[in-house]
Image (cartoon, rainbow, N blue to C red):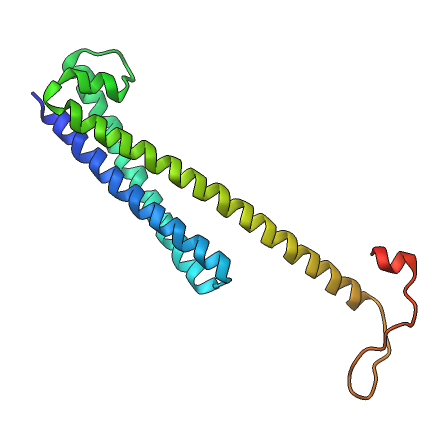
Length: 163
């Protein structure tokens, strides 16, 4: 009678493990962004994507198991984990502990994602500025010295300084 509950506990434990791996991959991604290492960025991105796919598969299976429990115990549709834990008191403490761990991990991953998004936005802003400066310099014809250096006007006008 408690086989679906045991399956739910197993799935929640798998979700916790996958979220731990995702948090580690997010940390690696942030370090790669700080050090500007494109090879580590690609590796972290691959790890994050594979973790996300495994989490999605576990989540799909979890929903099926919850529906089995709902039918088996004649519960209301879409019960909370607290309600499911009350159905079989022998699993209550373990299920609630897994829920707390999963909530903590998702909060941590959410914070890491926000930081990564802000860092990526700042990096893209700086890159955009550099590209605009280089593009502006390339658009203007200039004279080069014998050493290959462009000559700079002795005085920069107001419009050139703003651009």
